[in-house]
Length: 391
Ligand SMILES: Cc1cc2nc3c(=O)[nH]c(=O)nc-3n(C[C@H](O)[C@H](O)[C@H](O)COP(=O)(O)OP(=O)(O)OC[C@H]3O[C@@H](n4cnc5c(N)ncnc54)[C@H](O)[C@@H]3O)c2cc1C
Image (cartoon, rainbow, N blue to C red; front, top):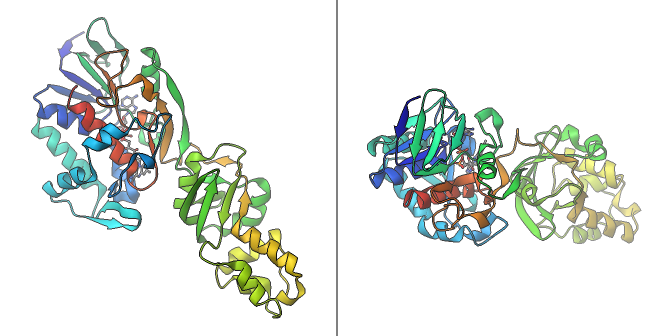
């Protein structure tokens, strides 16, 4: 079979792979990008609801989870949110800031993919889509076998992402390659993912699909303020997606349903009134929700029929609604996969495997998981940029 020589082979034409290809291409390297999908960067295309939340104005290591929380610092220090904004500006792509300093395209995420593609063309990066990799060997240089050819290069970059959203072509390929070369991994788990109600909660709340509340959700010492959205099966929305990344099976999630109100004070101020409990609380929460909640925890009566002790307990439950999810909606609905190649195996400056010179891992395939808000794409750009300077 034909052997084609390149300087750098990148597997994965997604966010990190394309960024790395552009940077290596700028250095005059002969770059080949292989992807099994039929289109470029499918996740970028659908990201941010089609508007691509491409970064965040405030990117710090604190916004990432990893077995080594310091690992991401070096790459983040060398590729800032301004760098990606400058890239978009150069390509005349308009963007705007939303709540939480998140930056989104004003038009379509596909413009970002088009801009990445244009840069690849400019720097003579060859991209082969619809090219699954059959195997990788390393007699001396890396040899990547596809059904038509073998590609050989001194540098191999694995940019195949996490395994969430398999319908967009996601796989655990990166972890399999890491294992093949003897590198440790932290198993993938679904993250930024909707949670499922327990059987008991489903009975009371499954009918509330579409209702959204502004809450503070907490799990262990993690807290996130934002909307919680009822689905047919459980809870989603930004605060729940954020908490899902740190939640482990069997753990409690405590939801403050009225984070801006001292609800005990409200109840005590009305304790002599004949207003129904759910009608009073409906001033702060959607009526359908509070009716269901009262049915589950505190059958509604006129306020003046509750002893103070019971009002205290009701207020406590509204500030600390405690649920134990039955699980998550899994990879099919997870925005990212947490876990990945163990960062101890890699140089934080170059993303190169310490034990296997020339082998690089970038993007979501690494054990670096961003919070919601543009952090995962920013990690893809920053880690791709880092490897692209040296590969
Ligand atoms: C629905 C959705 C919305 C999202 N929205 C946002 C957002 O707004 N902001 C944000 O920061 N993050 C968002 N994310 C997360 C973000 O898209 C990813 O973290 C990011 O794309 C990861 O970049 P990557 O380069 O590591 O992997 P990807 O961009 O996923 O690219 C991996 C590439 O590898 C290819 N590949 C996989 N397996 C193989 C294989 N075996 N052989 C060959 N090729 C392979 C894939 O086809 C793909 O092209 C979203 C994710 C999803 C699913």
